[in-house]
Image 1 (cartoon, helix red, strand yellow):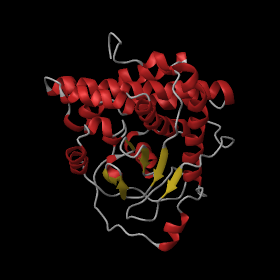
Image 2: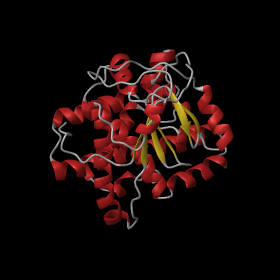
Image 3: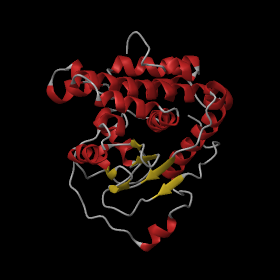
Image 4: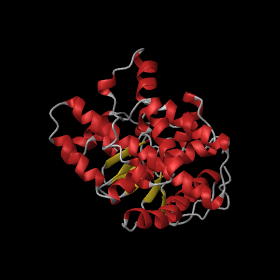
Length: 301
């Protein structure tokens, strides 16, 4: 993926260095992850009333636990907030975010009649505060609808490579685009409607099915971004698409459950199977149209 010529976003908060743990980018010379527990996710859900499957993006299932470290803020890091990242990993994230802004600023009004207001991306190491509670690296990248921000510890990309064999710039760009897809859903008013439906769901299975539809839509919207970006900047090749599909496959609920417990339980899926995630990304990529991502009206997920 040729991303160096993309415009860097100004909507990046670089909080790295405030907390313990590592960040990183394969080949970037930074350390690994190291803190958190999924209990934090459940606590955030309980406090905010937001279903954790909607609150968190598709990638958080991939990460493991670790040891929590003391969070601290040093004056140099605090003064760096608002400045553009200068390291390779930070520049990558900033430029991918900037490219999503350039694409969605153009196509969302044209395709839906809704103006696009960009999200802010928070880069952190180990842990930081979010509008939805404490963000921790073990939760993986996520979108918080309460403060309209995407949170990501860039060490997650290292985790993708070492734990799941998923690598490549476009695989990492897909993760960011997926979280931005949740923001697009928020802009369109979809997240709030789904949350209301989940609260009135007759069963946990029904609530999970709604969550799957939300996540598959975000995968599809990532595909829509990729198609429109490539049409304008011609930055992708077929190997890049394979990288994204490898990432989508690796975080399918079926593969994750089979790896962790030896078998899959479809009724407990919250993000969709590998086949579903790949199929919906390609649906968005082939069409380039936001309307093609209506997973709620689709005959199958």
